[in-house]
Length: 291
Ligand SMILES: NC(=O)c1ccc[n+]([C@@H]2O[C@H](COP(=O)([O-])OP(=O)(O)OC[C@H]3O[C@@H](n4cnc5c(N)ncnc54)[C@H](OP(=O)(O)O)[C@@H]3O)[C@@H](O)[C@H]2O)c1
Image 1 (cartoon, rainbow, N blue to C red):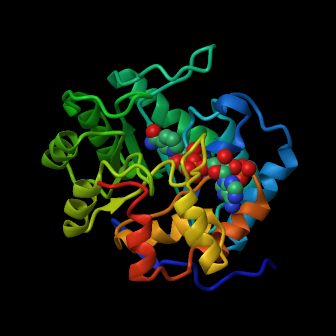
Image 2: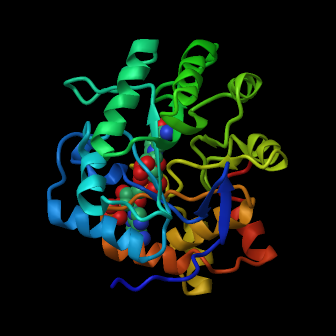
């Protein structure tokens, strides 16, 4: 029997009717280089996923585009049949080309196929939460999301999806989605050094909608800052722990999905994110990424 931690930093949040620990896990880093192909060490990837569950994490973020199919298949191999408490969140709206690019796949037939592929690779009959991912690698792009979002609403009505969210979106697109159907989360780029969404976070908090920052540790170029290192040194903590603790303290509707391919980093991040940042620490950290 695996040891279960009873509490994770940040407590819990309700995604619609699904209770999740605010400290989750992003599976993207488990695929091969450039998020293409299998991991260098298959057994290590399975071990990371099993450690996620052992630590009490109940929210895993993935996509069939990671690998493609690789992270979904690893999640299934490591964890199926899934614990009842686990909620796997996936995203649709982009596919992969042979160069590792992420071309959009947002036509109704692309989205229907992608939902069925996610169900198949994850070994599920219903997806707990699906994010419609828009924009491109440069970030959110303006434009209507009505057609693709209505397609997902239709699939939700068919019973294939429990809850909907949107990702890589502008504030206008968040409002447009909410005018069509309820959403339970927005997943956008945000971290200590990149704070474009401060207004969106506060607006969503008032509406009890989760904000799930991707690249919470800086993504492919992990955060590096002398201010962050100084604050971490003073607290006898790692810079990554401080970056995660800062997000948990930033707003109660922020859910963490930091990625790692290392069980040691995973444990370190969970252990460290519970540290309490003082007003002085926060003021100093504010110098890194002014709104
Ligand atoms: N919606 C979207 O468009 C979108 C886009 C990108 C990502 N995402 C989601 O967001 C999740 C998080 O993003 P991410 O994983 O790309 O970036 P991230 O969480 O910001 O950072 C991951 C990087 O940080 C490193 N790291 C983690 N813990 C560390 C530690 N304690 N010490 C040193 N380095 C550490 C990892 O390396 P190691 O592997 O060596 O630990 C990895 O290189 C993804 O897994 C994915 O699910 C969504």
